[in-house]
Amino acid sequence: MRKGFWITIDYAKDGQKIKIFNNNVSHNDSLDLISNGFGQFFNQVKLIKDGSFLIDEEHQILYVSNKKFEKKYFITYLINGKKYKQESSSMDAYGLLKNVKENKQLNDTLASLNNKIDKYSITVYKGLDAYKKFGRKYIYGVIVIKPKE
Image (tube, rainbow, N blue to C red):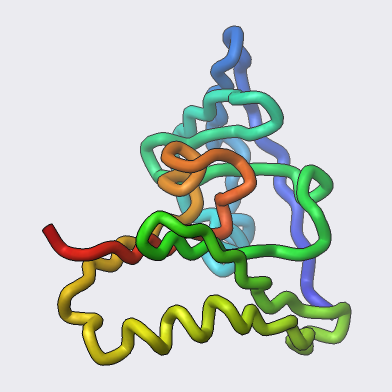
């Protein structure tokens, strides 16, 4: 089982903006925040509401309820302008990785580029960057592979 924690925070809402203050963060809370990847909450955090998302521009983090997404997560590849989706691994309740279905067409396309990869540029977008450039369905990542100019 995973250890859980909770903290009480103070916040102020102004239209679509939310400011979170760290008035109640104790030493023990701070250790839990850091170990669980929420160290940014030591200082004031400014979030902007965008639909069902909360965006922290300063730390380049996008917060979203897990209920807003399908049970499967996909990484998208854009290769020479053509879109390929590859299911991403996820963990079950025991922390074991589930098997994912392989995208044979994607694998064949990547294999065809193998000998000439130095002629291509590869750009990876994830999280907030992917959301801004491609939209909400792509926050798990987009890998753009295109010929170098």
